[in-house]
Length: 391
Image (tube, rainbow, N blue to C red):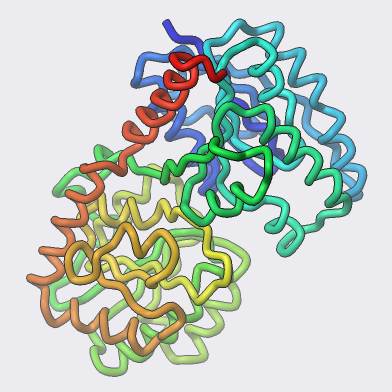
């Protein structure tokens, strides 16, 4: 049996949690298990109960950096590499190592290189720029040295989008090692006829959003668009599934617009509840604003499509490649609330169009955007490097 190490050294990724990064990790693990692999998980943040179907995973908890000043945490994270290396040495040998890229970790990829096995590095975002802009990054020079070191050691870098791939290709160490492997979805979580968490009522049209309530998800645009739609179509309601830093601002905006009774906020929900909430929607929205560096591979959109819910999304980044407007969804200009409202009204008035978009959307997912497809690509890259002696 193929024995692999999956490494997540980022303290901000609770591998058993319900954040988007957590769900991504869990789904990749499940898909690798379904492929028949024996998986050891090395993780810094292991808080919470083990999610379903991850029982076969052998867990190795890594030391967690102490709370305190950012500079202290950064140095502690960097200093934890010997602990990770020792843990891999003790638990191995492995057929290959798979790591979710984090700012301070390089030991896993160097372990793989020195043991002559493939080291695959999953890169979900330009982390250095992201942390510098949205969080606190004290020693940027050190993160750049770590990036050069880990990119050099990795056999292959698996970027979740073309935009992330373009970012990676700016580093000299990544030459001819970058491949795009978009996120996926488990379509079996979204069977036809699933009961709705919020039962549908005759004549009511439900617009929905699922995700963390953060500024770059465009929720203000969605509320503005919904206000325009509701003024023309009072039977419309808006369902916002999730929690986050924009919650209070959005609820206040809904109240100020007189829409408190028409907009329902669920707060945080468990991943297992998402299919039922999607079954409550007549259309699902990804209302991203116009962002200069849109590098996301939005799992929410894959879930919308897998659940047979027609999608209206911003024409931006990877969404332009996934969605063919008027074929498997509708695309609108980013940040254009009026265009979003018009597209939503179009689906309200033409239910048959919505049904067609939903069915083709589901077929799009089944044709190549499942977590099993992701696992297959991972294995292909690992096998390729072994067969051609490039490890």
